[in-house]
Image (tube, rainbow, N blue to C red):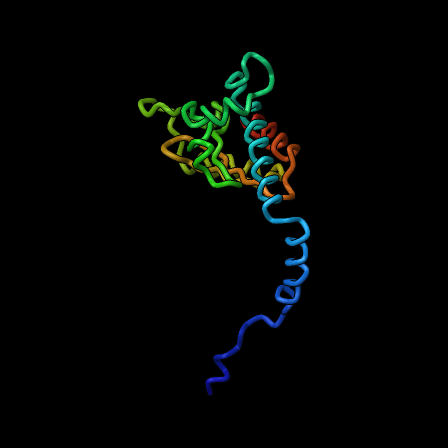
Length: 166
């Protein structure tokens, strides 16, 4: 009788059988090096998005955003939800361009909603760009994350596509 309820569901053991290969990979690349690279790639991604979406902020008059300025002032300038030293190592919320994000000033009528976030996220998805868009206190942010497979070109593409949203 009880044997009818002991069915484990899936008989595909491929995931379990791949554990030795996964362990060999992580030992070969050294996890601490991967974490370091991911953190640096995310910082570069943040710099690229801020350069696209908020030109002139932390640029010192030039075209390139200065990472030191971004690290020190991103939350105060409303570019990220929290200061970079407090966010998760591989993930951050970056405010969308002004024409999409709404205003940070709470006394205005340009507050965004979750419906606005979904509209932006759906547009990005339709352009083969998968990124969550979150509405926090009436302001829209992209939740960007970075792993081994993400490149500066991915962030550049996201930055350009978001600027095309009507």
